[in-house]
Image (cartoon, rainbow, N blue to C red):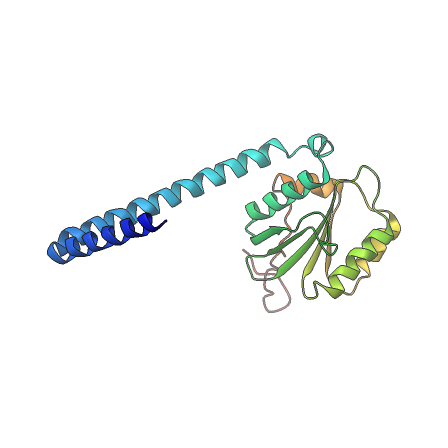
Length: 202
């Protein structure tokens, strides 16, 4: 440990002396190092993006989703949100998650809280009420999203639609569209109205 610190100190002194004697060369080397570091970061970003696209493309079919475990489904949802432009996407773990599986921030700054249910059966009203309770308590101010590979019962859907807090529903049919990019979790912009109440042409 001590030898390592001594080595670093000696290297720092040598670099400082070199910079003092050859400031132009030192600036050039520094610029090259910064450019190389930036290039490495850019390549790493491109590799991560390519892997994400491959992962999403390989798992867009509902038949494959049906074979996933709960954690695998949560990861798929998180990856799709990142691809859609969400920032600070966090998979919150399995236990003690407070009823929320994923948190994220939309491009406009709105926080989202997501519950994922990889179900082959229907999602009932009690599960929706539990999620709404989590949103009202620990995640107030978040836009809630319930994503399921199954479908909601009529009572569950009514519970969600009548909730005071915003709750988006991604059931099986919409899930298929969302995974391939035909649907979005982000709010749709409404075209401004012209005088006389007619929508402006885009």
